[in-house]
Length: 149
Image (tube, rainbow, N blue to C red):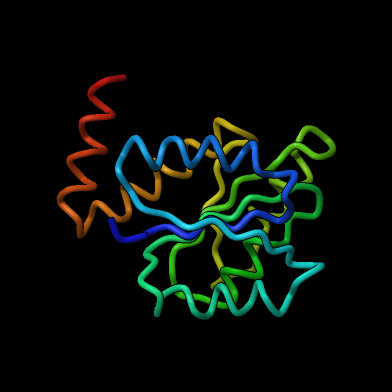
């Protein structure tokens, strides 16, 4: 299985939220890789991950971060791939993270989903819809999942 999705989490403490996305990716049989890279602590690594993602065959990047949550914005500024942000409730019930992700300047969008595990699962559903536009297998897996709801 080729890996279509790159998940980047800002900290190892975000692993529990990433696991919710990983479970949904496995359910839909979408391959993924997971990297830990903070936009603030590891800016060079974060930028390299974003810039190299398309060449490595990824089709969507999911970024999960809390507090200031600049991770998805930095990634979106350095790739043309769709970037989905998952806010994590590290403070202010995740509102600070969500606002950091949604208030991007024109031309550098970050698709932002709900806070926490529900958002992590929805980020995968959104990624499946994007990938499913050109991948019949993913489209069929998404349709089967939707019909099961």
